[in-house]
Length: 432
Image (cartoon, rainbow, N blue to C red; front, side):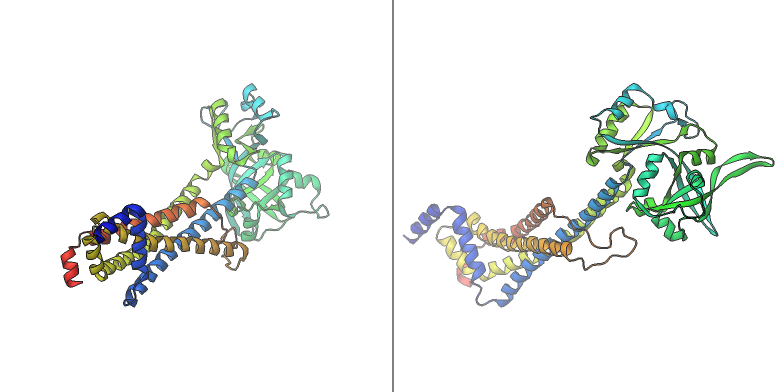
């Protein structure tokens, strides 16, 4: 009679609700086992800390990548066009300035609905910069007056007209260096320096290096330390005079209206001029973004082991629970509970422990990220372009981390659940 009433109750309540309810009662009523309660709490805390750590680390690393993209967005180089050896008029990396004067590409760049905002021809070369006793290698870019005007908006320091260098001389031999390079070599506007080209020219006694004196016209800031350290700018005329190459360019630089559409714009331009090499900002910095992705994946896998270790505590908790509830399990089996129903009781306990831990970890991770976002109390060394930790709030990270934590918990619950389902009722009643 009792058996029939229990079975009727099971059918009435449904399979899952009554097993979940019994599992919750078992988890709640550990009156005589403080150690078991402690392990249960430890399991929840371990999973919560693991989830929190993964969310915070992924959010911070995503913040660094987002800040890097913002700084690249503020630069003028979104798409780079360079000649190939089979390009028309190719000579040692240089081509005639008119080599890209084609109707289709001109219409694409100059049309009102063009995705390209700005387009500059550039003559660039590697050079050795010598200031006093300090020497370093740089990339010298000869750009148009419009580009020089853009640099003035980024200028940290600019040579004033009242200085002894007259305006004409400044325009012909003025040089713009990055803030990082200026700090490393102790340069200020108005300083004299020498640029040495690796390409030689014929002299009375054979080949001699090309030398040219420059003034520091200004110091620009781009927010990208690597660019500020290695790239210098001068007027087209000054660089052409330095290299002895008239009406030649080595590359074209484009700035697009929508930064995220740069790969599509680069692909479209590449189809128009297959004899040139077209690269977007992501391709130009592919090694950097690849390393960021690898670091993010590595940190995720390493921190996932915290959740794995915490899941071992769940195995211990449920195994001890099975041993403690031998008698109750045997009675339920005697009343008609199936093996799958007994297993689902302890499976539900494990899911409850994991859900509370993962949910609490997600909330803690959000709070920690919120604190890092609004209270910038962590200061980074000078080698980073940001002095505080940048943080993003990406819902995908919260979902993926919580889902992975729950998968680990589910796998951890399989063994003790099967152990409970295989318990012999007679043994449980006799020795429980």
